[in-house]
Amino acid sequence: MKHAATPVADLRGEATLDSIAWIKLSSVALPLATPISDAKVLTGRQKPMTEVAFLFVEIETAQGRTGIGFSYSKRAGGPAQFAHAKEIADNLIGEDPSDIGRLWTKLVWAGASVGRSGVATQAIAALDIALWDLKAKRAGLPLAKLLGAHRDSVRCYNTSGGFLHTPTEQVLDNATASLAHGIGGIKIKVGHPDGKQDLRRLTAVREHIGDDVPLMVDANQQWDRPTAQRMGRAMEEFGLVWIEEPLDAYDAQGHAALAASLDTPIATGEMLASVAEHYELIRHNAADVIQPDAPRIGGITQFLKLAALAEHHHLQLAPHFAMEIHLHLAAAYPIEPWVEHFDWLEPLFEERLTISDGRMNVPARPGLGVTLTDQARAWTQATHEVGKRA
Image (cartoon, rainbow, N blue to C red):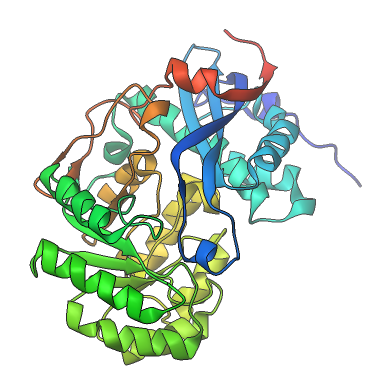
């Protein structure tokens, strides 16, 4: 005998305190002051980056509670995230916003034909993050405290001052400014077609900041296995915190061989789009430092699953980009992590994160602790609403 599906309303008991009444999606294009180039541009794989596309989600409940979340895409993919979110967002109307794990699964099944990674889960990520922001606000806690913080500040390093389009002298000036601002480490891009140029640039930075300042490099997947091996050996003398993305993001075996052969730790993971893809890195022992990106892998719900796996394997954690989200998640990771400082997103939010003594401080504001600026509204290219505001 077939049984009809039980309506959501019939499943509610006294534990259901609220329901989602209204959702607004916004597609926002953040222009960059200077076109950005890394090794992918120098090798002809990509064009310089001129903007970052964001999908913002605002949620309001029947009781007037609110949450905000976002995902993003660099160069291409932003409109696709927005389009998929438009198709599935109405599945949340009437649901209890506290049941985040169940709602994540519901959204995945709403778009099951397009899979469980990439654009599909990046669209879900913005909704998921908004739900976590709402839950923490309901509790009156910063998200880190809701999750259970291990610390109230996280080591931070700067990346935005060391891109390959930036002349070496400017990279040095940028490093000085970052350290004066209280940032704890410096990361520069490598991956020039001529590796000797990378080594000259790295030598200049190390000599400029001194041996005691944490220094990282990021090759953005541009080396093949032999080149990565040679460059990794040549860079051992610089005492790097890590070498990031030396190989193709999906080359787990290559990363594993490199990690086993070098003293310098290997970091990777930012370009992967699901927990399952990260698990391939973990089971191959392919990374000393795992670098997940919550908006890319499906939001906070998925990030927490990955963090549990990473902790079980005693991995260091250094989430990619989106410090406004990742500061909270890193603060809740048991092993001392890093968070990446980018000031690109500052025009989007009214609030600022504070930095002191090499660490980024978890804000006391409830939830993520961010609200959109008028400028973010002005950069909005499309919106879509479902439900009705309370």
